[in-house]
Amino acid sequence: MNRASYLLLRLTVALSMFGHGLVRLPKLDKFSAGMVKNFEKSMLPEVLVTPFSYALPFAELLCGVLLLLGLFTRLGLYLGGAIMLTLVLGSCLIEQWDALPSQMIHVAFFAVLLHFLPSNSFALDNARGRRDH
Figure 1 (cartoon, helix red, strand yellow):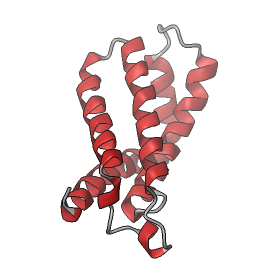
Figure 2 (cartoon, helix red, strand yellow; figure 1 turned 180 degrees about the vertical axis):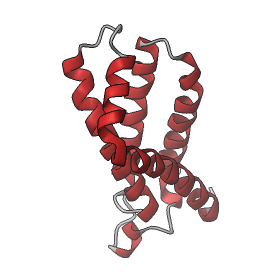
Figure 3 (tube, one colour; figure 1 turned 90 degrees about the horizontal axis):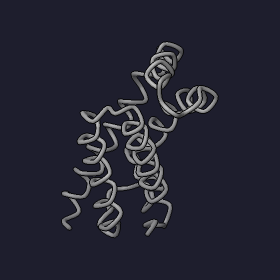
Figure 4 (cartoon, helix red, strand yellow; figure 1 turned 135 degrees about the horizontal axis):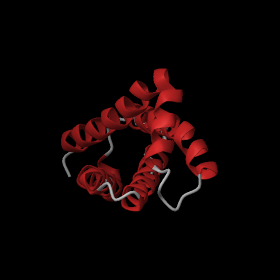
């Protein structure tokens, strides 16, 4: 993969994750309450949903920052993939089928970026003497 193409894909998915986390942080309590309400009729108990709802925006933000900087890129991609896998499961559990396409597209981007990680040239991983692949 062309290095500029890789950078464009990495930055796009990074901004998506960063933006999701960033906009949720100022309204964290409201976001959490909304997620708990969405899952109240699911098989997941509130004791699991509540901590996840508070952790999710921080995980999204961290993933976005790592990928924007190209720092610990592999870890950032695995984190993003794990976030998306949990969101896919959650969407299925509450039958929110309209969210799945977006989540699955994110998973595909994470998979492509992992596969072509050697093309990750514009990254702080390189400045620290490591290409992280």
